[in-house]
Image (cartoon, rainbow, N blue to C red; front, side):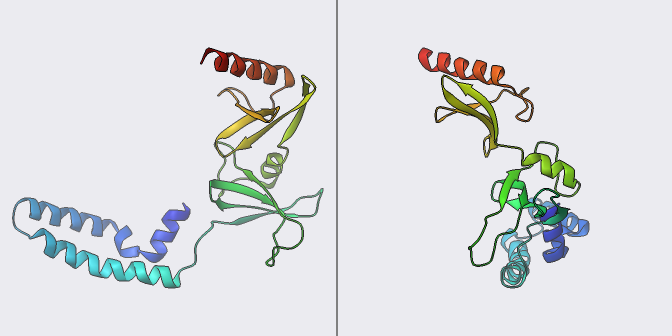
Length: 188
């Protein structure tokens, strides 16, 4: 939705259905030998290039940010936006000079969207990483990273199964996953 909004704001003619239909008709004319392809592309490219240059110089990069409210426990602002690795929730605000307390970030879960996530749902995301207990005298935690949900034990990362929810998984299941990964590593 953020990308579509940006394109409509900055490339309205190209996003118009009639534009697409006319380009398809010109492609048909090229295929039938009624139109020279480089003439058609030149007619398209010059105005398009000018639009791109204008957008680079004058448009703001949209982050699709939405402020959801204030966390009742910390008093910090909670917002959602597009980050480097996809949609995320942010707890707290970073200062312009980089000093002070840094905000916390958490990826949105599958099925959650910036445009309709509620404050309560976003606050749940900050319950990770979550300590599950100890195994072999080492801490076991669960979290979500850029490659999905995982268990961390003894500085090793073990992916959760498709049916495992990082907000619900218990120590017993984490130990099963740790041992299963060890077995796979031995067989390799």
